[in-house]
Length: 202
Image (tube, rainbow, N blue to C red; front, side):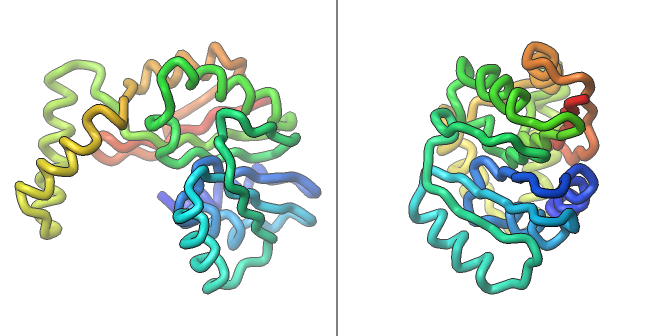
């Protein structure tokens, strides 16, 4: 998914434009974008409210070559004024924001995007039905066990995130895209209950 986020950003990045990675954390998607984009005179801006994350991000992006400049800013994305931009990435970020702020930030992203721009939104999603949701969670937990996680580790992680990461269904995300003014949208990646979506501005 990370590699293809870079490829998608390259497809929609326009010359002399800004590309945002909102909630960039350690910079994995930030670097993927900066390495893939071939548009001229672009810059990638990674924003996060954690100085510790940005320090790690800075070390990470300095360790690898990338053709597009990267700027890191410590800020709260809910209060940050976005400049006109061609691509915005939110990689597992929206799910940690207060639910009543989510539509507002999508509207602000839509307003900042240039015509032909795209929002790449990756989220862990709830199943549309309870039985579907339980199946997706079961499959994901089995995947973790197969990769060395103990039942205790899985349970502790779920408990830690229970009241912090408030999930939406995919239809809720699509409804927000409509409300924010996006012209069209689609899911391009799915694994268990992890989804990545594209929302387009004509």
